[in-house]
Structures are given as C-alpha cells and as structure tokens.
Image (cartoon, rainbow, N blue to C red; front, side, top):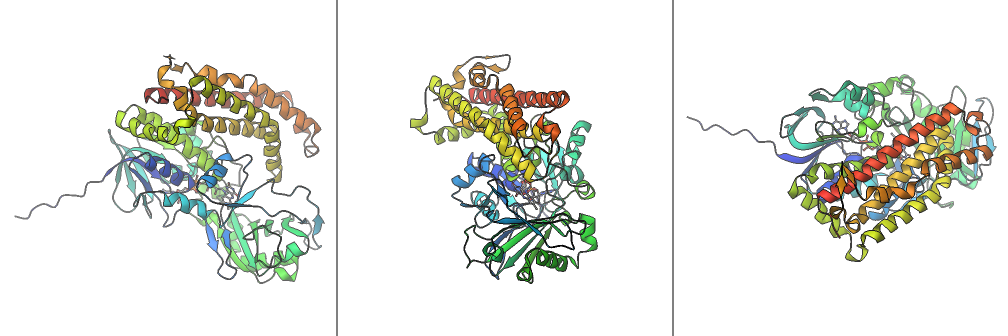
Length: 553
Ligand SMILES: Cc1cc2nc3c(=O)[nH]c(=O)nc-3n(C[C@H](O)[C@H](O)[C@H](O)COP(=O)(O)OP(=O)(O)OC[C@H]3O[C@@H](n4cnc5c(N)ncnc54)[C@H](O)[C@@H]3O)c2cc1C
C-alpha cells in the first residue's frame, strides 16, 4: 500500500496585499516592519505597477514612462518618504520659452512662461523606479510573489482565500486590494458578492492616466535649452500627435554638454494608436521636428502605451475619454467585518490618482489595520511596541504639551491654507482641468491639511496618553481638544479661496469661478463638511486605537 502524499498546506498570512505598485509596496514595508506576516501578490513579472523607468543605453539617462512629477508643497508624503529613504530629487526644468503650435501649416509661436509651466514640480533623480526599489529593498525575502494575478476572494470564516491565475491559493486574515478600482471590479470575483453600491463606486472611479501613452525621445544634447527654450510645447490642432512636450533630461542643470530628453503625451486615443501603431514613431519624429527643427530628428524613441497594459487599464478606462481622478469615500470603508480594504491611489482622499495618493492610501490602511488588530493583544503589542520605540524618550511629552504641539501644527497648517489653495488651483489650470476649479482646489486644500494633521498626530500619541482618558459613546475625551484649533476652518478656507478668485487674473476666463453662484457655494460647503466629518472620525479612531492598545508615554 502506498503512503498518501499530504497536500501542501497554504500558509496563513496576516495580511495579503494584491498589487505591488507604490501603494502595495509602501504598505508592505510598514506592515512587515511591525512584524506582521505579509504576502504581496503581483500580476506582472515586475514591481512598480504604473511606475516604469527605462534606461537609455545610448545616453545613459533614466526615463520615466509612467509617473514623473511630484509637488512637494502640496504632496508632503512623497517628499517625506524620499527624504526618509535618502533619495534625491531634481527640479523640473522650466526656464526658457514654451512653444505653441495651433496651426499645422505654420511655425510654432514662442511664449514666455513666467514662473514656469510645471508649478514647482520635481522629479526623482534616477527615475521613479528608485522609489520602488528602495521600498522593495526594505521587505523580507519572498514577501512578493510575481506573476500571481488574483482572480477571486472567498470569505472562509476565520480566513480569506485568495485564488490566483497560477500557483497555489493563499489564505490570509486580512486582504488589501492595492490596484485600480475599475480593474479589480473587472478582474476579481468576490464570494460573498460585493454590495451594488460598492460595485458602482468601483466602476465610477477612473484610473488616472491608464489610457494614455507616453513617448520619451533622447538626444545627444539638450539643443532646445541652448536656443533659449524650456522644452515645453503644446500642440493644439486636430492632427496633433504629441499634445504636450516637456524636458526630461537626466538633470535639470542648464549645461550644454549633457545628453537631452524630451517627453510627451500622445494626443491620439487608444483606438487611434492601435490604428497608427506602425507609423507612430515616424509621426512623433516629424512632430518634434516641426516644433524644434532638424536637430530633433533621429533621436532614440521610448514609447509606452498604457492602454495596452491589462494590469493597469480596465476595459472601461480604455473605452472612455480620460476623466479627472475622483475618489468615492465609500471605497475607504473596509468590507467583510474590517477584513478587506480597498487601496491604491484612486481611493485616496488627498493626491487622488497621483503617487502621493498611493502613499496616502497605504498610510490610511496601515492605520485601519492597526485598528482592526488592536483587539488582538499579541498584534497590538507588536504594533505599538514599535510605534513607541520610534518615538524617542526626549520627544515624549506630557499630554498638555502634546495637545499644544498639535494645536500649533494646526495653526501653521491653517496659515498655509491660502497659499496652498493657490497652488492647487494653479496645478489644475496647468493640467487644463477647468471644470469645478474652485470646488476641487478648496477640497484638495482641505484634504491636504487633514492628511498632514493626521500624520502629525501619530508621533504625539504616546505623549497624549490616550489610554488614560475617558471614552463615552465611542468618542474619545481628547478628540474635542485636538479638533478645537480647527474652529471656523471651513469658513475661513472658503473665504480665502473666494477672495483669491475675485482678484485672480488666471481666472479671468472663468467667470463662474471668479464669483461662484449660490449653488456652487452650497456644493463646496457640503463637500467641506463631508471631508471634515471623515477627518474628525479618523482622528477619534486613532485615539481609540491608541487607548485600546495602551499607548502611553
Ligand atoms: C503615463 C503616466 C503618467 C503619470 N504621471 C504621474 C505624475 O507625473 N505624477 C504622479 O504623482 N502620478 C502620475 N501618474 C500616476 C501614478 O503612476 C499612480 O498614481 C501610482 O503609480 C499608482 O500607484 P498604485 O500602487 O496605487 O497603483 P498601480 O501602480 O496601478 O499598482 C497596482 C498594481 O496592481 C497590480 N495588479 C493589477 N491587477 C492585479 C491582479 N488581478 N492581481 C495582482 N496584481 C494586480 C498591477 O500590476 C500593479 O502592479 C502617472 C501614471 C501614468 C500611467
């Protein structure tokens, strides 16, 4: 009689993360540092998701074919993470004239662009992939399984079973879906099925840049700089091939000796790109020549069509015109009794669609998981032992001092709000997103402020001694004191925005923004109230978790 061979038993992970993009990797880094058993399942054979950096052998330049820019003044998380990981950044090169081509039969016009086009944008030196590499380097071996496309999640009582298209199923206590909402709706089956409202919210969340294509061409020299041009160009006629061009040389110094690179977004939609696929390189070459002359011919072209990437672009994104990112707060609510979380940039309250949003959602889920695990003593102890270790003894303060520090931080954030509103507005204008400008810029400013306030709360938790304060009806006694410095904040922010709009030349072509009507003001007020509620609940919850877990000074 043969001895039966036991079937391999799938290991039980504390947390399974679906997707090794920025969100998945940043979250995995935090959770593994807490001592949790984390398994990241990634469909592609590479890390980074939408982050993709090519290397030009001819010129030695790193070329971002996915995300390029971040804005430290409005995107504090990515700026802080780069500093923590010791990664450098360079300013986007903007000095010089921009070119505008509105008629294919005429030469481009030169425009002086005072203050630059990219509103203080910076790039990660060596390409955005450096961030991905640094996050991945912090993970224990075998944390990430590549070529593991997740197809189904099943609730199995004490664990969740995660099925992949290849390889064994995985069991995990909790699951984070760190991939674009539309994609997960199309690719992953849930048992029990997701509620209709959630399915609708997933379908209504466009994947930022998913249907775009990016072209980067390298040259022996950045010849446009020596001609007094910035490398920025805008092509606005029906036969445009590149809609927008920008300088993406490996460094931003104004030297004549370094190699050059021009990046651009393709003007044709996904279906047109399919149709012209073979001739696209030639069309790009001749468009660059029309803008910059013969020096721009014959460069090395790197072309990335994201609409053909099944792990980025959903069928819905591909079939619809690009839409601005918008996150439905419903997607920030966990499902299945706090065991399944939606992550990824498209779920973020601040920085939605951007790298900042990917990091923001990772941070939100890291806190939510700590909350869910706070009930289980071994986990809580592990999580907060580390949190406390990170706070040096010197920085532990008394409760009054911690509240004072938080209040001072809030006052400083309030002081920065008018300038930040202006920056958010400028960025929307630069990105040519002219719909609901005031509403979006006000909300982005509020969300940024809340996001930073929460980040500033974390190191103060030991000093706040939340475990030794009353909790009544789910409300932590310290909530009121911490929220007090926000008194009148929504109204002040809206007043500052309206006063800026009334005197803004940039808004002179947008009368509805110059003086928004009563309906618009009502909509903004409702948005602000909803954002405030979400923030106040999150702050209270962080105090409750700290209290339950016994975080003390
Ligand atoms: C051309 C382009 C330009 C951009 N420019 C900028 C910019 O300048 N600045 C900026 O801040 N942002 C920019 N972005 C957006 C930025 O890239 C994203 O916000 C960010 O990278 C999103 O990270 P994420 O982890 O949320 O999602 P993703 O990077 O999309 O990661 C999701 C991961 O999930 C994986 N996955 C998908 N399906 C499955 C499955 N079934 N099973 C397992 N894994 C799966 C994917 O392979 C991927 O690795 C740009 C994006 C593109 C495409």
